[in-house]
Image (tube, rainbow, N blue to C red):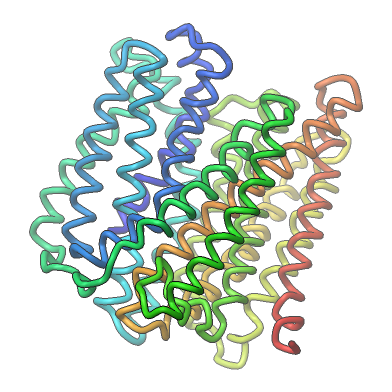
Length: 452
């Protein structure tokens, strides 16, 4: 399950590095190249909750294998695509496969592990989230630079095929194959349509708005998303009062700590997404790093995130409740430190790697305990709803961070008039302090909500 999570997450980031090569070889326009990169993310985000409900209805193991098969076949088709239009279409299908496959991971953890075993599994899941993001950029740089057998960018997709085949074979042996526990529960098609439309209107401008210079349609789309989200909430509440089967059970939203978890996960993933995106722009564009060196830059952040995600539960019990706020505070100090160390256009020397490691520790403490506590006491019958909700929140937080802080970086750079090391560093510093402010909000959010 974790290998599947890693592979799906890898595909969000691995194509970023290969995009220039894809564009030149397929003679893709700017808009087509954007859709090659973003099409996967759009369908993945939109259909996560739908995928969770399908697993609850037809069996999480069965649905996971169906999603894996679709993802693997689409990866093969992407690697063999002969034109930009074909590649875009297969990327959309790849996103559908991930959306069907990935929500089953948290649901199966919820249903098959209890107590300390569940905490360990959730810790491993958190670690994979961090490592996958960085590994995508590193592996993408390695594969594109290697140009295996003259295939250029194609191995970034084809690498999924043998891994997917192995996971399908192993999955058929080890995953539960029974039917879901909610076979009599309806799919709530009106709720699916409302939520899917709302998430689509929200994600499309986030992934395409900056490249299009935020045209009027992008702002109208975001306003429409807010309107549809409100309509979705109203419809779901009414359906629950009438005794129907809402897409997300209201008791999941009322679960102790769920509201705080949603807010914190949004904040930590926005900081994570914005930090990775802006720093990538700076080290590749401003400092001239290669794709491989840029990916390796994030290795300290990923390594310590994974280690802390796997070990935080062993820390003294008296520390546990303070871990998430402390993580946000450490993140705020560390990202501000990155901005200070890199200010002026230098590479920061050894000090910057200390700051990168601090970011990894802080993000892990903010994310892993939050996710674990939110899911630790959810009832097994609510596992799919909780898993779909938190997986969607994770993805939307990441997209929001990339859009917001990427826009801030590029606008600041444009106002300075040149893309050089010192101007890029100045724009980076502005973003790092904005990220620090966002992390600080995450630190105090628990105090505010608890008082209320």
